[in-house]
Amino acid sequence: MENEEFGAAQIDLNKLVELINAILEQQDKNSRLLNQVLRENINFQNQVRQGMYNELEDLKKQQRGEQFTPILKSIAAICVEYRALLNDETISENSRRSLQLMFDELEDILGDYGAEIFNSNAGEPRRPLLTKIISTVSTGDRNQHNTIAKSRRAGVVRNGRPLYREFVDVYVFDGDKSTSEFARTE
Image 1: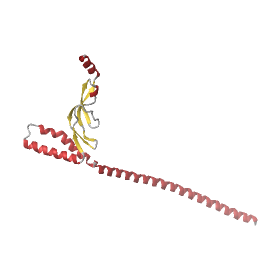
Image 2: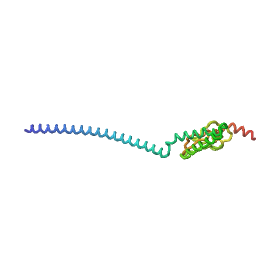
Image 3: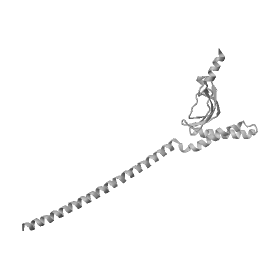
Image 4: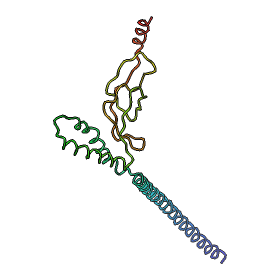
C-alpha cells in the first residue's frame, strides 16, 4: 500500500514537474513576445518622434518665410542681371521708364521679404559668404589684402544669407610688389 501511495505521489510529482515546465515554456514565450512588442513600440515611437521633428522643422522654415527663398532667388537674379538694360542707349525712354518701374517693383518685393540689394565699396574687407571673386589684383600693401578692388555686379542678401552673390575683384598681397615699390621710394 505504501508503494501504491509512493507511486501515486510519484505520478503527481511528475505531473507537477510537467506543469511547471509548461508554465516556464509559456513564460519564456511571453517574455520573447513582450521583448518583441517593446522593440516594435520603441521603433514606432522613434518614427513618430522623427516625423514630428521633421514637421516642426518645416513649420519653422515656413514661419521664417523660407518657402519663398527659391522665388526670391529668381527675382534677385532678374534684378541684378537685367538692371544693366536701363543703361542701354537703344531703348526708348518709354521702355526705360517701364523697365525702371518693373525693377522698382521687384526690389519692393525683395524688400517686403527682408532681402536687400548691396554693393561693396572699394577698400572694404571682402565678405566671403556674400561675394564671389572674379579676378584678383596684385598689391604691395598688406593692408589691402583680401579687400574689394571693384564690385562688378551687385548681390542680394536676406537674413545674412546670400540670395545672389556679388561678383568682385579682390586685392591680393604680392611681396614682390612691396619690395619693388620700397626700392622706388628710396
